[in-house]
Amino acid sequence: MNTSNMLKTTILLGTLTGLLVLIGSAIGGTGGMIFAFGFAILMNMGAWYFSDKLALAMSGAKEASPQDAPELHRMVEDLAARANMPKPRVYLIESEMPNAFATGRDPQHAAVAATTGIMSILTRDELAGVMAHELAHIKHRDTLVSSVAATIAGAITMLADMAMWALIFGGFGGSDEEEGGAAGAVGGILMIFLAPIAAVIIQLAISRSREFGADEGGARILGDPRPLANALEKLEAWSMQRMQLMQSGMAAPVEQPRPATAHLYIAPVPGGTLLNLFRTHPPTEARVMRLRDLANTPEFGSPRRVMA
Image 1 (cartoon, rainbow, N blue to C red):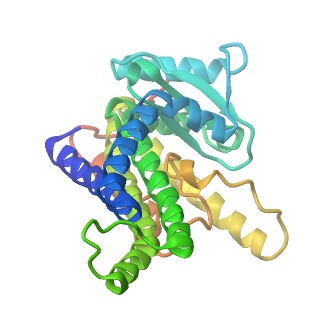
Image 2 (cartoon, rainbow, N blue to C red):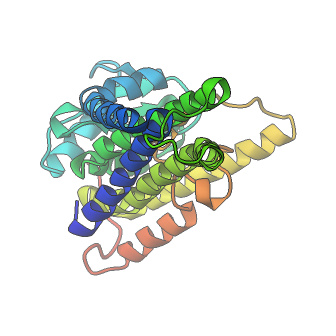
């Protein structure tokens, strides 16, 4: 992780923690603020230790042995060796939606998961591009940061709900100096509605900012940006086609990932965003353009066979 990305991420995570503390103050004054700060520390520790297990369980992923998915295991092992990192655990998700994600607090406690759908529509090199992207997330520690951000954002939403009920049944007990009931109530109401939205926006900003870095890192692990660019275009085309079929009634909706894990996947969840502000990923066109530009640099030159 470069210094610029580390600074931006630190600021964003600090802002999330600050929102959590502000809601605690609105609910219970100084005591509530201290409680919320301690709660944030506990949530961060929980996310650090259990992020991989929670994400895999919520996604319905099942660990695959080398006998269950021999080609995928060989591919991940080869890419991990190229990236000079331990081989992560390999999981499969029974879903026709083509997607994949990585999780874990560090390269020694990491896992990659792929849906059966993505394995059925991508070529071997394209799938290798996707897996290399996920290994780059692990190597850059993106999986840990995303998990912590999601945990804090979830805690903010939960405390905002508590603040709403506190306001309904007894008002905010937050001001130690009893300053201004009406103004405090208005401020509390605004916080209830705006804090969770702000938390989601910050969480998505963290996720979006890391996709470009993982695309470039994955291209370097694989040795060619083109397979990942082709894979992203194919995943986007599948998503658009499926949306059209669903709207015309010619296809049933696919099972969607839970909102808490949607930002982990390599491709955005169809229909899961509201305008560009709430996208979990940068636009696919922008990602593909960057990869195509990278492919034209002297570092990569002409296309090559990336997997033996």
